[in-house]
Image 1 (tube, rainbow, N blue to C red):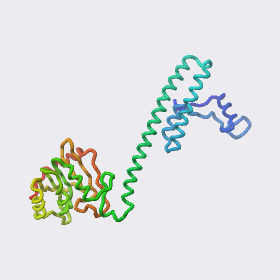
Image 2 (image 1 turned 135 degrees about the vertical axis):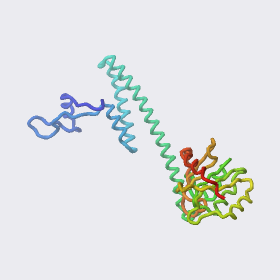
Image 3 (image 1 turned 180 degrees about the vertical axis):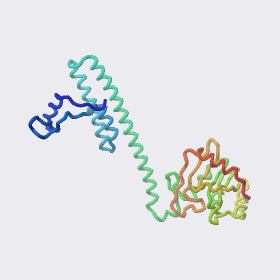
Image 4 (image 1 turned 90 degrees about the horizontal axis):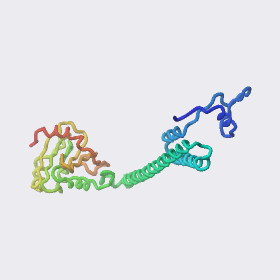
Length: 281
């Protein structure tokens, strides 16, 4: 039960308080004309879960402590007024609320830690915007400020077997950033090469001459990808996937971000579809 209506006797006692609304006395106007309702302890706990903010948290903890102190006092100083069954009930509730207090403290501590982590992350991101001269040289990779070319090189360097690139806007820089990949990595570029952006055969031949140990092929993207993606080691235990705010050929030209995707398997069905498209010459 979360609330109850007070009795006439309780109304009379409450009406004598200087801090509460008085009840209307017969023949005298003003005050309440009905018996008010009050929260039970459980009702107050429920109300506390709705309140937000630092002050609300402090008040909630204070109320929990107040209920515990009250029960401890009743149990220790007034046992002669209670039956044995009531003593057992109070002892049980006291133990229960002690456990609830411990859980609340744990939750508050966890929220404080998460808040500090969030503030630190935001601080790192905001540092990126302090110096406008760095806008055209850096990007944000998973919340960390990095030189744009270094960020892409680091990502490609993590691949052990394969790299899938989904990007409709490619150029010679696209290949230049791939020159540092590990040996025997298979690179597949999925691109519909829009707005005149294209890799020429000369560009591809130069790349293959520089990295003859690396396999490189082109496939159409099927017109289904708007954003840019990088997939490392597709369908392996160490598969990684990144969402890129800009094409790698434009790395460092404007402020952009690269973010790791937690569940790359969500994209597998789409990737399987474009893998069925023919290899481009």
